[in-house]
Length: 279
Ligand code: C2E
Ligand code: MG
Ligand code: MG
Ligand code: MG
Image (cartoon, rainbow, N blue to C red; front, top):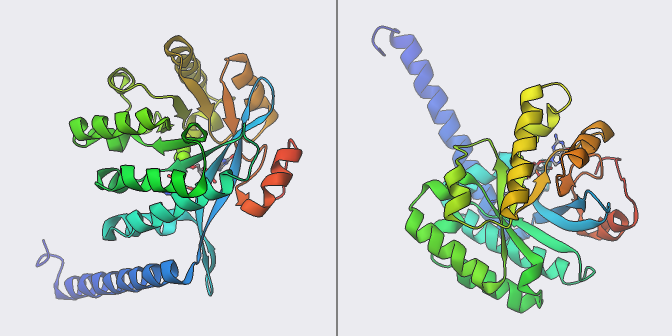
């Protein structure tokens, strides 16, 4: 194949690989330094109870405050942090920060933290969750851990043990981005999740696609029957919120209420039902 493409093409391809590998190495060095320099910061996005409108949870969403490049979204550094294993340290930082911040919020407002599958495989996970709770003084019942289906695909015995250990501590477990991966109903049977987060893609198509509506109806119904809270992600307008309310979805999260903002804006987000200005 390489031969058929001709020598020029092949060499061009090699040069391209080199540049990419180099960019990757640079980003990796940058990531390590950023951890030392304290450039990471959790932002928080409110999740509201649909029936009462009350803020019940803030989800911690990591941002990299880069001195030259400005605010960097997780899609641009989490994958490399996962490949290099740096996500373990980064994840511990998020856990500690989120628990410490949440300990200063009203007692009926919880915090949700995303866990990477790599963190999940790390034997220190239970210890670092315990440490974050102990150091911050946050009661375990106020911490939610969000995992995606990909966690469940790997070594299910060990995964189930870890999930059960976390739950025994009093921490709650959410299934994030439900409907995007290899969504399997058997996951809901093999592990008692506390919450299902319906992926944003279904919510954004709510008004325009009947099949999205049908899926939301099915998942909220399933949640109700199984006693699992359902949260809709990516709610951006009143029409979507109204449809979700009608289907009995428990909670809603999205730009309609607020974008993720720094911890210093939590009081503001608790005060105002809507805060649409970007952050
Ligand atoms: P996620 O956990 O599903 O988080 C929700 C994402 O949707 C966030 O993107 C949030 O800003 C965005 N979002 C919320 N409401 C709306 C809306 O109404 N419209 C639109 N268009 N988007 C909305 P963000 O902050 O860029 O994070 C992306 C993903 O990165 C997260 O998806 C999560 O998988 C990952 N992530 C973020 N923080 C962490 C972290 O601390 N650790 C790990 N392992 N992953 C993280
Ligand atoms: Mg999440
Ligand atoms: Mg999600
Ligand atoms: Mg998502």
